[in-house]
Image (tube, rainbow, N blue to C red):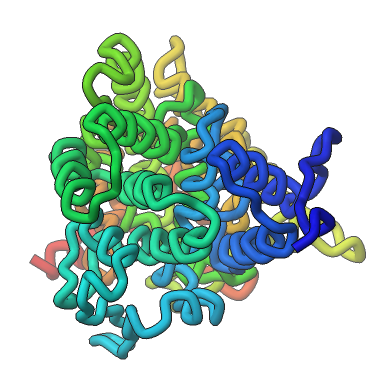
Length: 483
């Protein structure tokens, strides 16, 4: 091939994702001694773009891979970051034809229970495909074949990366890329020592050729990438941290991907969020003093605050949607959330007057002369800022600010929120609906029902009468009858 086929990095700043991918790949591969052709770089860049550009990807988008690159100058980190999420079968609903072609007969797909696809690593002889054997052993899988579960997406992404680059990079660099992608499997106990012992073993068995110090350096590179991948947990502003949490939710709740989703879709999504179950010690990692203890302590402190603020925020949001779900259930059943809350800014029509839900709610609050008692004296400042100003970044499915949650928390506070959580379950039923609504102060519930009724014109009278009757002796007998 002539030199005309070699891609030269442009000195000007790239203006598109494609240009940035081309530059990143070319620069990184060149630093590793490779001389990639323009056609190869284009092919890999387009593969990454198509992989990360699926309509179901809100968080794991093309911007995410550049975020994971961070400020790193290490070519292995950058290449691994670009490839680490190219396969995400449970979010994308399968694989691209390019993925299937690259993986070939090594991976089998079949239909599992509930209609979901099952992916199986097919048996093979390590000597017949030493690079695949290397990746399999780094991930702790079996060359004799097995069903793929935990780490499935990272494993498949690593194979794609290695097979794309196998003709331009030395095996030792492919080994390091596979190790880095393996370490992006999140929240694993004993992950550091488990991966390190595998790397030592694979380096010896597969004759990778790394020295013991180079294996240790591989772990440091893997830790850098893994910590970059979870960096949003340690963002200083909880509003920004929760922005990324919110962008993840449509990836695992298909109902939220529609431009008009139901109250139950929202309720289901929030009920599945549990930040309390995340172990702070499994988010960021250090290997043999890198990062040092001071940096790790700072990270864990910030993470702890974000998880605490975030969980209370989610709890209040869950209780809020449970109130809507309860009122919907008792006045006709599930419906689109826009019925109760009006159009969002993105859905507005220039031909009709546009009313913001928060403006209507504010007028109703003034009408009932309610007080924000739990936000006085600087209490819960982070939470009030989250409710009033909103999450830092917009999401495709929810408003940034939370006027209902702000009004509700001002009325019931953290204790009232905790008391309502046992009833705020998905799916909502009549018994829990009565218990949820009776836990809301009378005036607060009347304000909400009055506001919902302003938009849900098909249920206005039912909503207002249900709210007024919910604290009556007749309603109390309904609650008792469920016991």
